[in-house]
Length: 578
Image 1: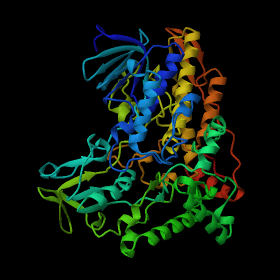
Image 2: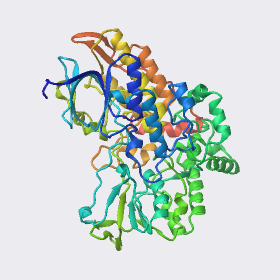
Image 3: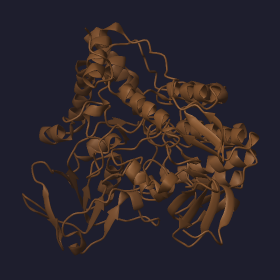
Image 4: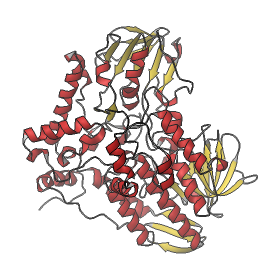
């Protein structure tokens, strides 16, 4: 890479979603010059790209919004409990306008390569439009679900109609009136879009490989009592949300065990949470994420709810998950999804019974029959957490490539930095709570940590900070320790990279909870950035290589200890009992 004609900046932020916007705002406040580069033509990240019918957030709007500025909170009033994509994009535009962020943003620019130059202690960055940057800090705000999977099918180029991807929906929208439409996939994007498309199309055929759990949103205007609870104490409301495992309030009951609760009481509690809607059911019983029998109780309740909504028992059975425990994939939140299959113009195809053999000029052929379509929708998911990062030619010390470093799965320290890649930060990267949480709260916590770190380096006139290999290895072990007692690894989920052929299988996010993780990050800083090597040229300020800030063992109900010990022992994370 050449070194001439470069744009010199203190920090280059990649991505203008919520993470990139807040990162720019925080660095400005710290007096650190920063520029954002963004592949799209506007701000908003996820909500800029994902414009498919029915797209909306699955966290309550009051919690899925910035909390760093009180006036910003007061200025914006959400119209619904779960805001739709268009409103979320307007919110992103409002934030960009309010803080004049666009003057330091460059749109239509995709980073293609970034190489670390050890002698200069700086990153040299290349883009697809020829602009080249020289920066001290490289901050990847690239999003966890921003790169669609490269799913294709034999003969797809032969289909004579349009093929749409939910992840790259036309900005002008699509009118399916009078059309025969096929949609492949039944993940979150499909579950949100299927009811809308079914209401437009002459006929909709849904091709399903794996059914997912979905809870009703019961969406509508925010109830006055909910809004007043927030408005009366927004700071306290935010603090309570952040002080949870998921970064949102769902009435979690850490001491409530389904296996120690009377059946009638279980039913009452699950019914109450189902009526409330959304993710509230996740917090019902602490053992449902660990004990298969407790999980089965929740599964059976949801299966009953599916049967109550779907008239055809065979279709209801196909829509009921059977291959993974409840909660081991991110559940979906829907409006009218299951009832859509009662419509006379909607058909469900089980791809296990009749796999797709090829696309052709008329549509899709399965082993059972030909399906003719005017349009086809691919709702086939994302290369989660790593896709946007490892598509950049990232090279650290001695030319170490990120793809090689992550050949057996992504390795990070705290999900914030990667050993061998100084001054490169990943916002909500693998190894952090990120996709298991309310992303806004995880974003704010990461952005604030990074801004504090850069200010600390500046005050000490230090040129670089890097995660040590030892701390990275310790952290990866702790990430495994956190998830192993749970049922989460039992699903072939995108958490595990299972939806991308050839991607290493490992559980990528940190399952220990946002509140626990936030305290760990605080302890790391309090110990002088434990686990990081801080230096200026050859002069080393700090070389605290080990990670010792393990969280205290949580209070675990005694009934769950045998299961947890058995799993940790089987994974080699705990010595076997003598």
